[in-house]
Length: 561
Image 1 (cartoon, helix red, strand yellow):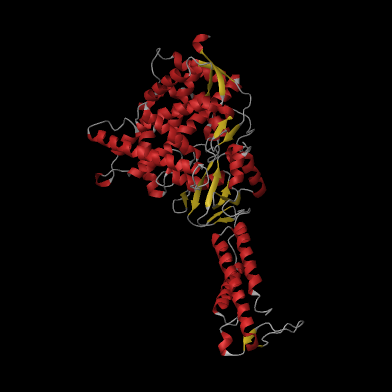
Image 2: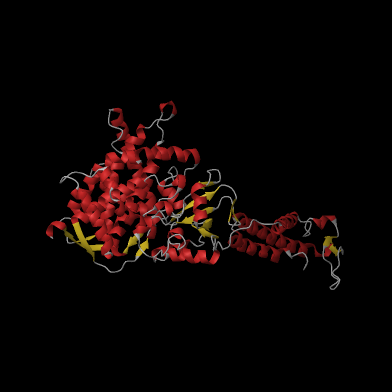
């Protein structure tokens, strides 16, 4: 009996090996194989024991091999044919289990892919909670930097239920932003994909990505944006009149979010102020809350609230698209907002270039990227200007010169924006030190070799913006705020400054964010002075960076001075 029940402990070892193998090797197939084969062997051993007790008088021992020291039989066979099907080695379940175990052991002896160092941690959870907690505690950059210091430029982990390889450095950024679509695809977390949609630029690759990107660029490129500076400026003037004038104290971040969303509603949606705008704003806030959450759709979770809000926004956008389509058919201009612009584009055979889902999902993406990126950037610029009088004085001098060069009340032009060079250097340095986008994901479509290791096909690839932004080999004294770094942007090594991505995947809304930021800062510094109400300059990520208490400030209109 000792010899035929060896399958039970061996099966248990395979179960344990499957779990450990997942943490070390990262293959869900190994986990499933270890569990499946191990449990099968345990069952086979149990059936063998039952067979032995039932037919123990039918067996004799036949020595095929002898242990020289113990002199005991290593294999036994049944005495009669009738009992043979119940004997462990002849039992089909036991035999199948042993064969499968042999296959697995043989594969384990074969050379494995050289996976990066690190561990996938506990299945499903992995390192997700550690990263999310670090974001909330304003230690995400340190959490990532410590990992890079421990493992080097490449390591494996598990994020949001997926085996992941974290890569960083100039070579890593170049790999992420320039890899061919057949090698690496856009890929976001499951929660982000389900909330933002699967037809956005974040998910598309190859020809589809290029087609949608060109469509968006037709509205967001500089030549087109020149026509919308005035509309943007009118929204900013109205915002300051409604929310800043007559106030002694304001909280910057929520007001900047209100401003940037109103700009988006005007230029992207073509929606006037009123109940519809308010509904968009309310649902959009719920969308943002679940973008980096665990994709567990249970009541009262952030993910559940975000999914419901996303569904409502998509319903509202479908109705809006239908209205815009009717307006175009009745002769409306195709350049009044982004939606009408996209609807007017035609492909082969004169059909609409983008599907309705592609329009909706990319509009939601622009809401996320354009709304929070600009509002956070402007908020942190205001914090920096309050903390550094010399930088504030230089920005104010530049903006006053622009203001004095124009007749009173005249709107800004594209030429005026081109004169705001120092202000944009301040913005670029702010983006270097506090990039709104923490990082992103890609998906390996084939095995990819990097730094002597293999990134397996199907795995996530995780990159982080701050790794090169805070690298002292790229930016000396990286903790020092110094706009002069961008006097000659061409001297910065390629793929090291990536707040808007890089290469062919650079954010198409880059110029939109630039115009929005420059016009807003122009009006803030020329119309108000301010000082911080809170000396704490720390921030948290939710997942985007947010200053402590939303940056409350005391303001004084310039006319009062």
